[in-house]
Structures are given as structure tokens and as C-alpha cells.
Length: 285
Image (cartoon, rainbow, N blue to C red; front, top):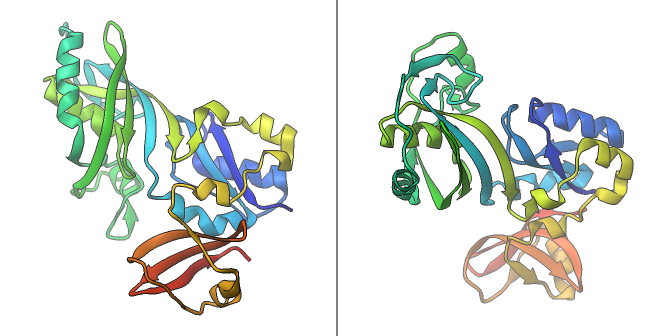
């Protein structure tokens, strides 16, 4: 069985875990994992790793992501999306104008603080927040810094707006919907969400489960091609064995946490530079 990543177009209504199970059955292997959980009701890009590629999932964690989100105004829910219970409703409200929406969106560009939804997989004292929320336990969600590099209004309806977002890891679009509503003095919730991109994985070339079943191993993307967002280091071929055995190589270069190590056109794994020494962090074999 080959190794590699799959660019899955996850359908709405399926958990990321269920998507992994489908891929396990298609490829008859247990070594399958996903990068970047996508909420069940969201659709779009979900990178799936097969066999040795699972070792490198962690290096996709820092990738920027892009989304298309439809935000519904006039109601707010406890989960931040339409799966939750309605906790606030505005009757006969005036929908913000396009200019007002664009002005409000500008406040979320750059590095901002967010409070993740209580119905999320973030762990609070070792337990997932959504488990605590479902049992009506009282707890505070820790705020976090995230970065939004693009917010663009692309659609405008009677009571909703569709925006596209480029953002850092850890950004909750449900929280953004809630916060945008507060900025406009209106209850708001996320109505629909499509993930357009995770790093170099794009929706334009994502495959459905049926297509993956049809094409099989031919739809696998090489591991090294899916890590091109990392800086590349060309290692002297004489030092390949040392790198693969975890031995350091002295080099004159600044510290670097993650490097894609290649030698003679061959991908060897992920390395790091610390105090003038290159060491392996994860090798391909």
C-alpha cells in the first residue's frame, strides 16, 4: 500500500472521524488520520493521511486556512450555528447595509482575540468543552489570539451575508459570526460553512468519497508535495545516513523549528536547526 495525502471534499452532515473511517475501508488500512477537524455540518477541504503520511499530519497544523461562511442575522444560538438552541432573537430588525457590513468586517482584520464556542472540542480540565456544555456545567472558555488576513463580503441576502475568510489556525468561524453580530448590535449565527483551503489543499481539486473509491491509490498526493509550506533544506548526500540515524550535522544557519529535508531530489523527512546543528525530527522510513 502506498503512502500519501488525500484532499477530501467532506460532505455536510459527516464528522471528520466518520470521513476517516470511510477512507480506512476504501484503502483497507488502519493507518489513516486527518488534519484540522471540520465541524459535522461544515463541508469542504479535509486533508486525509494514509499510512506513513500519518506521521506528518502535525506539520499541517500551522497552515493558514480559508473559508466561505454564510452568517444569519436575527437569531443567536448557544452553539454559534443552527445546530444549537436559540438563545436570542430580534424581531423586525433592519438588515445592515453593505457599507455597514464592510465597515464592521474591517474591525476583525489582523490579530484579534476570540472566545471559542462552548460547543467545541477544546479541552477544559481534561474534558471536551462540548461534553461539559451538554451537561449544563458552568465554565469559562479561555480567550485566544488568532490572525485574520482577509475578510471579504461576497454575498448579501435579506437576512444573511456571505463572507470569505483567510485566517490562522485556531480561528473559530462560529465565534466570528457571533462577534460580527455583536459589532452590528444584532444576534447572529453561522448558517453555512465551506472550508476552501488548508495550506496547499484547495477545494478546486478536492475529491469526494465516491471519487476516491473510484480512483484508489492514484488519488494519493506525495507526502513531500503536501509539506511545501515548510522551508526546504538540501542536505549533503554524505550526511543522509547521519540524518536518518538521528545524528547531528554541523551547519552555519539560524535556528529553524521545521524544515523539509531533501537530498538529491529525495524527501528524507522533517528536521530542525538548533544552535548550529541540524537534527531529524521525523524521518520518512
